[in-house]
Length: 323
Image (cartoon, rainbow, N blue to C red):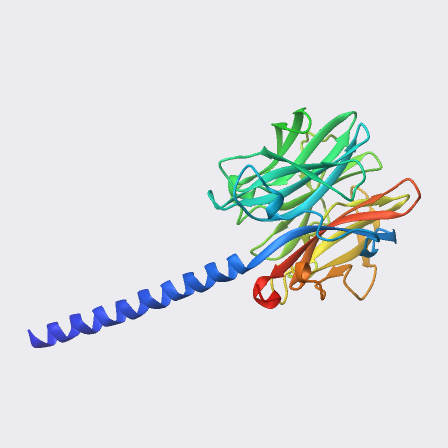
């Protein structure tokens, strides 16, 4: 009996230690999450892969404090589209009440000052990476919604505030299907869809003759394997004349630390080739507080004077900023 009592006491102490350890880890994780916040900035350059902070702009151009209709911890993953002379910026905002990502919207007429209008897309599952684009006069969005176990294509029923799902290019368990950060481009009559599979750190490529499918995996997919540096999409696939560029967010030494650029030199229904544009990241952390820990999204656009602008996001660790 005494042995049984001693054994129960030992088990109770061990359980208490384990529970206390787990609670400390949860608390530390929450404190880290609360101290690390994303915001959105504007960069510029002579081409889509040579970027610097935009002159005459006070970065960041959009923060969680601009969100007025829901409590938000951060804003990130910016994607912009111009429609009827107005610039529309879509982005992930983390709703702290739901602890889930939603798609927010802001509008501007000069690209420098932005007015937040509200949440334009909310689902029962997490949303981020609102890849917005135009095709044949219609506006579409391909957000990341891996927790729905699918990639979903949305169409604007009433732009910019009303989006309806119209197709699902990929479906399946997210551990077995590449569902993260889908990035799409129309090239020489074919649609190409890049997406990331986290478990194996592979960049997959799918192809279709129509935006609505059917989609099939490209013969060269995965086009990049086993890398936490160069596989996960980090922004819009950019076309500059005959050139195509893709951006990849680096998961080392931590998630969202920097973004690399790659020039796609060959993309056909049967072939794929790419090369790095530089041995240095396109964007990365810097001395300014709003990006003192990392940067991980690039949405680049060529403007009327031939120069490029890019919407980017920066990660601030408020503990480094002394906040």
